[in-house]
Length: 290
Ligand code: AMP
Ligand code: MN
Ligand code: MN
Ligand code: MN
Image (cartoon, rainbow, N blue to C red; front, side):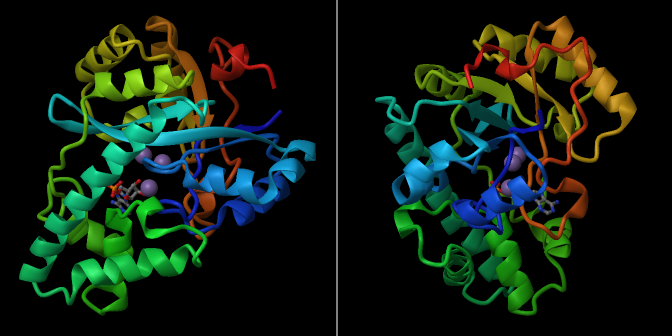
């Protein structure tokens, strides 16, 4: 069975619509696919409303998920909520909170980009995200993020590539990386738990923490009620895979695997392109009845 439990659609900063993502996942022989947009479940809601019955009869199993942004000791972290109950009472409020945080941040990012000469940053980024979603999501469902600003900077000729936009202006510590009012780690773990989901620390190696600090994070993540961590990610090395697998055992965290797919252009992070979990790991899906 091939699991990919971390993917994005046009409901956040992915480039494929929910349906196109599903088609691609099938093409890549994925058996179980979690859709985990940034702070949004609009993609899964759209699928359920538009083709609910068809979804249940197809071989690909779709897991409702979300990737929440939060902070821990001043560091922005991403926590996946996997197999969440979309009807859970508090979930709408949690998503509304995140949406507001994103909007407020987008205004600040736009102010800063305007100062350095990017033309109409807010309108431009909105235009990018609206076009990408091809009208299937309403404005209040859209999660405006830095990738949309990056794309606008490319389209307006301010930089040549999105990569450049991140390297120079939007990446960690750059002027467009506006500290935003993300909730604390504990808060998002609580939201996920209350929605009957598994809270999984996303891409633990991407925060560039020292070993000691990563261990401290995992310890606290566990204490806060977190369930698991991503162990197998796209483009990982055998060393890192073994290291993260060991950490998941040390902290008794369930192990997850996901490509963090955003679009077909990044071939090394295509849907389903994740190595199998090492044998000693306890998979996050071991408690699911699929
Ligand atoms: P946001 O959620 O708005 O803070 O944007 C974060 C997203 O930007 C991540 O989920 C990635 O998809 C993308 N991203 C972050 N860093 C980079 C980078 N250096 N180059 C390209 N994309 C990036
Ligand atoms: Mn993203
Ligand atoms: Mn992430
Ligand atoms: Mn992601």
